[in-house]
Length: 212
Image 1 (spheres, helix red, strand yellow):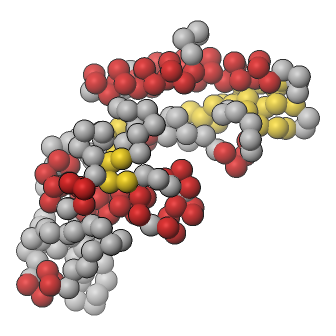
Image 2 (cartoon, rainbow, N blue to C red; image 1 turned 45 degrees about the vertical axis):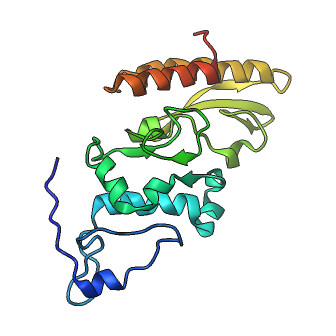
């Protein structure tokens, strides 16, 4: 893990800090968002960046307009204070990973020490799908030239699974679930934390069924 350089914050800097989105308290004794002599941002503290991004997802109306799935989400009162989040975050394997709130507890909407973990980008996005492309159709299913088109996302690409007649929505959904569950077992092999791995597999089975 890389060593982070922390420049002590001046009394003036500490005195000008405001609440982040009306809830977040930045109580760090160092410069979390340092600037050079021309006022340009230099290297922001990655812990602070993660904390602020978490708050934005939950308390920024502008962010939620772009990402409505975060409407109704919140951050535990403990984590409203940056130093509390920092103490937890420094103990995690966070570099190159994504902070996740709903792998350990399916459907969870609160970021907190007991509900969050770090996972890879693939794991973090595994249970999401593009709603815009499919409209009101089930996950993995969209309309294409008078048929149901079924696909799953693998990393940053989509894998085509086939086309189904409009009379066979059940078959299209089944094809998606089978492929998605099979992919879940493959992806889970890279999860080193046994608690996270077990929760991930349990959630995949709950969502996609037990038949391969």
